[in-house]
Image (tube, rainbow, N blue to C red; front, side):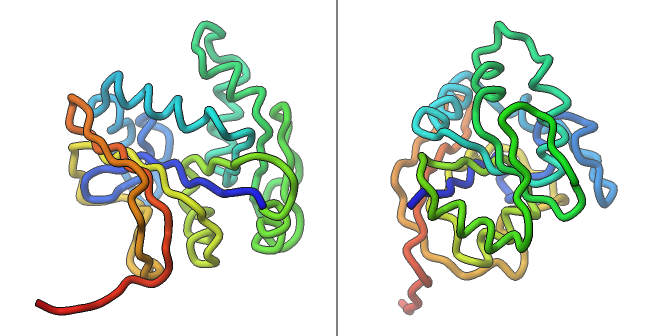
Amino acid sequence: MREIIMCTFLTLDGVMQAPGGPDEDAESGFTHGGWQKPASDDEVGAAVAGWYEHSDAMLLGRRTYEIFASYWPTADPANPFTARMNAMRKYVASRTLTSVEWQNSTLLRGDVVDALRELKASDGGRINVVGSGDLAQTLMRHGLVDEYRLTIHPVVLGTGKRLFADGAVPTALEPVSVSTTKGGTVVGVYRPTGRPGYDGY
């Protein structure tokens, strides 16, 4: 059974939208694209690189796939991520794409939840979900996330798509590792353990 790992950059108020650049995702009038780099540091980069050491595939929604496919094939080969991102197997969940051209990419066909369950049951290593906010919601609703790897940056935006939005499935999480970088980013790894408990003081 393969594990699906949610790898997400978040602001302190939980926004995951458009961390990488001003033009990445302006949906719903979002004007804060590119918020991550000014709030990041070298330790964050090292932690994110570690997320890929034991994963051999990525799972992407349409928007994230199109952003990555337009960038990584011609990215600077001196960037250590370039070869890794191009070589990894990519699985793409989309209701609108009819083909995927980026090397080592496979378009998931039919019902996305059935396709994801079949993917989890296949042979292979861990699968990282990168960005892909709408896909993330589907995965969480159907209990398909095995682990969350989050960087929580010291910036508040007040608007934008959130990973844990209103209506998120109540879930208890067990911390696997949590650390804080010199720049104040919390790097946390958590595994779902079922429904949360409730008690009083």
